[in-house]
Length: 321
Image 1 (cartoon, rainbow, N blue to C red):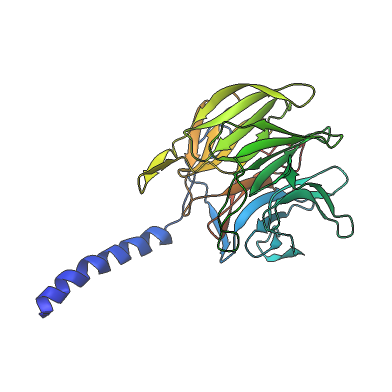
Image 2 (image 1 turned 45 degrees about the vertical axis):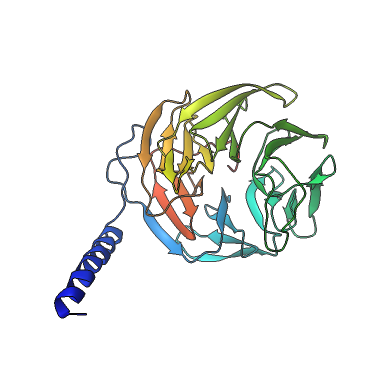
């Protein structure tokens, strides 16, 4: 190969690498979102190299914990950005929720189940199958004030360890305060993040395979009705002939605004589903939670990395998340 030919092949690659280096060297900042973020607020990179980033939730001391699902542990991020292990051997915990007594609830994917995993010695299994069919991949959950639990399962999952799993359709489930388990949503292709409105009269559901965040009205007995396309996502895009919004984790602030992790970044909507803006991230986010002593810091995890963003608004104080 001649020097000229070699140069012709190498130069574009060198320029591309240089462009990417410059792009990642620049700080990612927020746009102006009224009541949420000032223009130019820095998205602070904390650390990467985590193994399966999911399920962030606030602790009372101002720190945040999140799940490293593949690593089978929960990691804590202190306010000064130092990290430490909060809990080992979590059975692949994914989404998390605290009750007022400080018990930590988790959906777990290693041996699929839903239950209490902390404090140690108080572990408890709440559900591990529906009508005899084991859960496949429980993904997220939210805990209501009355003790009811809403959680998602993305359905049948083929793995090298389990190449012929029992057929399990995606769904959203509800465990009543008395412990009764019901499947309440069966018609969503890939149910993912789940969240409650501040008054707990509305259930929000992220459909990763769909263009919208969905909402449902909640009755006094925990049942749901009135499925609605609540918010249209800018993350709706096509990759390798597959359309997806990438909608994943959800969080709400004190004003009832909904924050959604999607292919586009963190999409923000008001309490009626009106688009307010999008906060870009260096990597696609997977999940998010308000934390810090005033809950005005939004922590975001995804693709092995963690970030935090100081905001003008505080997360909802009625739940840990």
